[in-house]
Length: 283
Image (cartoon, rainbow, N blue to C red; front, side):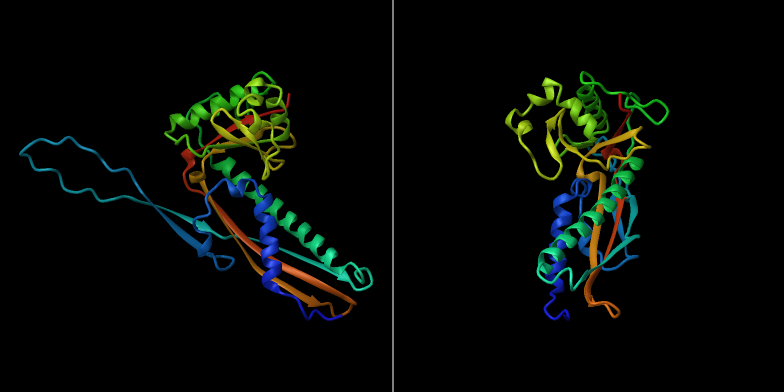
């Protein structure tokens, strides 16, 4: 049973659709440089213009010479590569092969997503910078309760404001237990009313304290402690991915068809001040 009607572009589109639907962190940062990625090992130089000095003007007086613009440059490296490779035996798949293949591709997409999302979550948590104290750390993590969890999100919001981060587009990703505490607080449940009561796709669970709130099991933690709750805006980090290869092939020593794929990606914190992190333990 040779693979004669396999369409690589169709399978690739299906896999990427699954990735986009179940990502959490990757949909919260910008994807501005993704179109420039072609292969594993690619790099993209990201330029940023520094502050420009504003000076007093005096009538009939020469102004100073123009400033030379500072050019802060960062590099986005596509340094992560993962693959999948699975087979479907002819006997097992005699009557259900299309459904079996589709289900296997969904599981491959989920596995790739889980690895990439965890990678990005840890990167954002490590790159976040807090303006002040009071948000916990690895030495003294905070312990939220039903009456304090929402207040901690307010403190996260204040930290971003003190770093001049715009209010528009703010997000925060919390672990499941923290979301459970928020559900016991009328300030969260009552904020947005129907919006917060609705089931929202893509991990979003509501709004509160100036954030769109997402829940994820990929919130970085150390063996169930020191959960790193990252908040920020899309300008804080960038992410790029590419599904380089999706190939079907006939296994030489088996009566089975197989599919393999190669996924490459990379991420970078580009504005540390646009991210803040809250470190908490379960009560």
